Image (tube, rainbow, N blue to C red; front, side, top):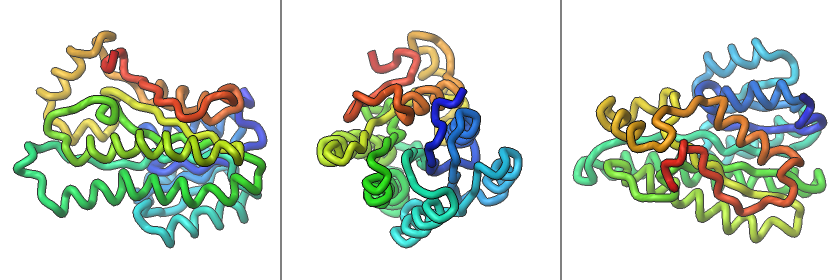
Length: 244
């Protein structure tokens, strides 16, 4: 316990699934946390459950203005920003011919532009704090090709690349930037795939099971904490061996 004592964190997409698991674990480890999401009811309920060290803000990660508001609120409420988890994401599963421009652009806006805006917004408060840790949630689809996920996969490869670029640029400020690459995780995101595709992915995973949100949260906690103080630019798969 106490692995994040004295830290202030923002977790996007924090109302349910992996994000909620990260918020719960961060709070249990001593962090003050701002959870953001467009799912207002779930986010407010989570913050009420976890107490005064957790706050919730409704937040569209594709909005530059809303990122400014999140950072301002976090610094005013909790006194700084040390950890950012770019967890929010959406997806769509369909053959390439059935991906519309509107679907593609919306996935890019959330998964790719949202991560860029988050990284950029975190720089000033993390420099003021003397450093920090940014953890970008990519995907196994950001390390290998995946059928029927052309927009989602493109954005997750982009997150992988942005992680590397930001790690190189921000190291001089003692800001570390790493990415986590979940495999098949038992969260609502599985709804973008058919049960048949999901089952096939599980069968092709060496550990032969889905992952749990808490298993992703523990990897994110390690990268957020000072235990990973000599890690930056790493791409960490948490996928049961699927990308071996």
